[in-house]
Image: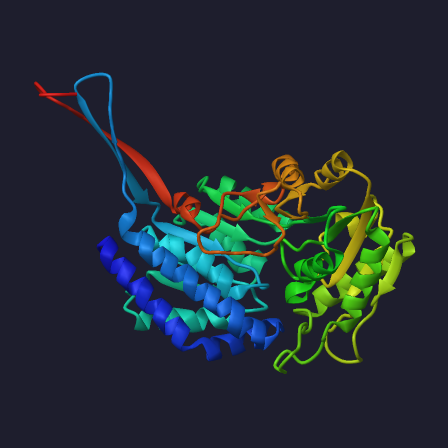
Length: 423
């Protein structure tokens, strides 16, 4: 198939996705528990935008002509790998579907994608729309199943040429090992995080509180890049803590299909119990519980928006990826200290900086060992902005031009020239 025809199919699919926003948003909320307004107004439109972005790339992927020292014509070809195996998580099912499938198809690969067992519905619906858009049979294959069975089979399969995984760091290690033990297929990994959100002494506290609140509580806290370590300068710390507490108490929790709800239930009982266990460990280790700390209501996997102050770096709530609605607030004195403490984590996915001082922003953005730095904003996921981690938050980049290299191999073709007019 020509690159232009691939582009047209992906574009037609994006149009169909947009047309069926209400249905797909409902599937996302039924499966995951996130607020329907979030699904319909934020995530599905972002998914549409991602596919349109890659539709635009499909016919602009090409190699180079390379000068050589001698009578040779040298060109590079950018070739698809072939079969791309992809494993996506349950926290943003359709967005992760777009981050994986979009570039893979644009580059000319076929795809076998395994959805999370908690959230299988939207990808199946999307695959149906892809066929309606004209995608040939066998190009996109959706497998619903569990990690140790379906996921392991995909990672180990000798006919899978490329693997991409988004999920926890511990599972990412297993996926990488299975790939290396089979056919040594290349693997890109987007893994866990424990991202710092740094509020500097010159910050507008009210704005910083609202932004940090969104950074950690969005999607029930089930974000790999959640700003779950809130570092606040000692000069504004007390004011910040009290206002963060008040904002958490005000957060609207309940039925995710009701208008105005900000937080629905956690995805399942395992996640629900894990979060409550870590909250209990925070109380036991001496952190100051300022808000929440227990389940919300008596039924469902709802958790109260929880805020801890006086958190120390050696506490479990400071080190482990909670993946829940829990904000841990730390106090710092100067930039050197907050840089060192921010970088002490094994993760390096993202960071937020809240300051009006350009020098401070520049110093921190270059010193923090993370893949994305947001300055006076957070969770900005434009289709063209690359996303990925340092250290144990993974390797490779999703979105943007950088993601194309995940699904292309480079071949050098060298042809001898006879009596060339020029070199």
